[in-house]
Image (cartoon, rainbow, N blue to C red; front, side):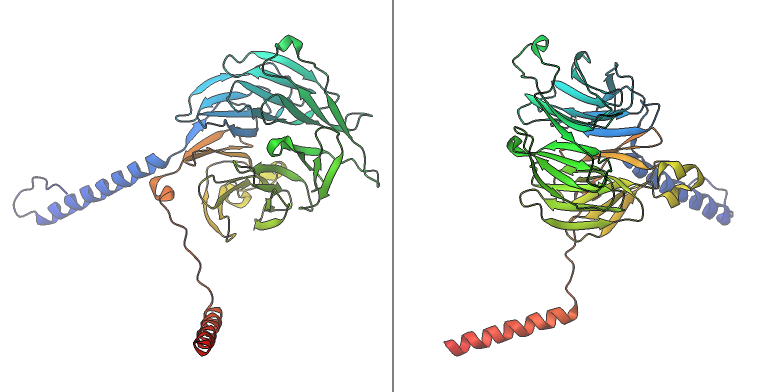
Length: 395
């Protein structure tokens, strides 16, 4: 602290002034530290956010909402680069190809659109019978798949389109190469798809449903390869790690579950007190980021701290929650994490996208190894001693 000028004999005043200066300095330093962690608020949408997704290189962030106009932002500073105008309904999903040259969007206006990522020009419109719920590029970016909701007498469908990169957009066929019909179940209920993903080498189509099931389909014949039920309620979102060896499901049953892609074995479960709308796997740490909260219809009658409108951090292996990031004023609908592992973005029902950059303390953090209970340690020690004795006797 610096010492201000003070008349002789006024020692009490000197102490008070110095103390006040010290407090101000400390507050200023603390404020500066918080400013480095303050997220960037992206104000580009007028309605609820539906999807947040980084491109493969992590330098661009794509967002969409119920306001019909997807946007693209610089991932490093949140600067808005442009929009993709043309849809007349909610944008439920979007996907970017490997080299960020073309973008696909799925909309409630019963169409999927292909865009030029650089100019924002609409290249092709693919019409469907019902609202398009999801879209996904195949490996190689020469074909893509969509899932659409049932409409009137038409069942929900999975559609596959071929759009070779070396062909002219005028030559693209606007009719699907393959359509997989999703009829009602034996009890007469409709089962609607919620997400679609291509597995490695385009071996199968991975589709989640609102009854908590996951099905695998052959992308050539359309045959159903496998079906299992990881959840009791709707699967809101599914996310894969970069290598597509693990996937995590987010469900309305208040849980997110981690699975092995190869054998579809259940590995871990992350439990919350509210519906989980999205979850992602950190690319470099054994961490899971979850987003969700109370249902949107009840938000206006609930305080933010009760609604659980925060991003929650869980340890991937130990299933323990160790942190949370607040800020949204509604349930988080979408989360995307940068492939470099240094930032993430969350979009919520409040219409805002928050771009967060991890601070040095998080990036340098080492996960503690949990200690085994004392009883287990004693048992292990006894086992080791027996082994040592038996080996000595053998010698």
